Image (tube, rainbow, N blue to C red; front, side, top):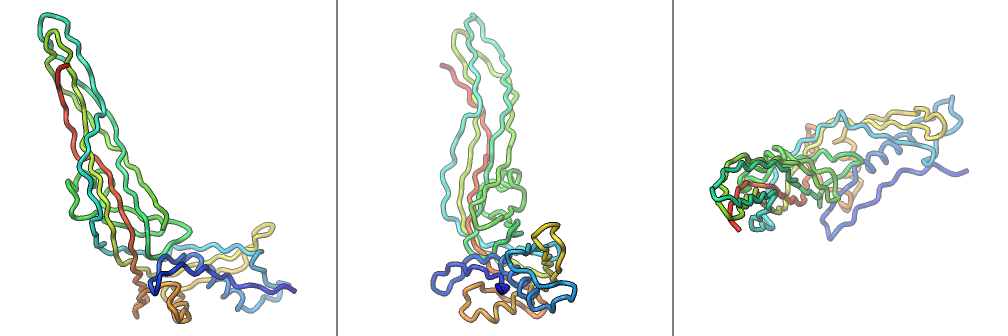
Length: 276
C-alpha cells in the first residue's frame, strides 16, 4: 500500500550562507500536512488521504504584517526628459495678429516597478509595503502618482501604473503671415533604488484541508501561531537554508527583506510657443 507523503517545500537557492526568498505558503502547507498525518484517524474514515488527494488552503486574515521604514540606496537617476504631449498649429494668413485659445488635456502613465530579492513570498500578495524614498525630486508629484505607500507583490518584477492628467487652457497671439505652434510638454523623472527593511509578522495561520475528489469534503482545519511554527522549523534547519529570522518572546517574527524600486513619473508641465 502506498504511504502518505509529507508536503515538502523546495529549499531556495543560496549563495554561501545568505538566504534569499522563502515561499512561506509552501512552508505552512508542509506544516499543515505533517500535522494532519500525526492526528489520530477518525473511526468513521477508512484511511487518511494521500497527498495527491488533498487540497490545502491557507487563510492569512489573522496574520498582521507590518513593514518598517525602508533604507534606500540610489542606484541610478537619469536626467529629466521632456515629452511633447500635444501641439497645435495656427496658420494666420490675414494681415492682422489674432488671439487664439490653446486648450489641451492629456494623460500620462507613471510607473513604479518593484522586485523582491531577499525575504519571503506567498501564494497571494506578500503584504510588504514601501514608503517612498525621502530624497525624491518633487516628492509631492511622486506621491500624487503612487500614493504614500507601494505594495511589493512578490519576487517577480511587478509594475504598478498610475494615470496622471495634464491640462492647459491659455490664450496665445498668432502673428500675421506666419504659422504659430503651441506645445504642451511634460518633464519626466526616472530613478532607481535598492532597499532593505524589516517586516514583522504576528498572528495565526489557518490551513483548511479538503478532499480534492468529488464534493471537496472538509477534512480538517489546522490552526497555528506564525512564530511557533516558524521557530519549530528554524530549530530543525541546522544549516539555515530555509530562512533567517528573529523571533522574540512576544511571538513576533522579524524578517529582513530587500529588493529594488524603479520610479518613472511626471514632475512638471510647460507650454512652448514658437513661429515657423
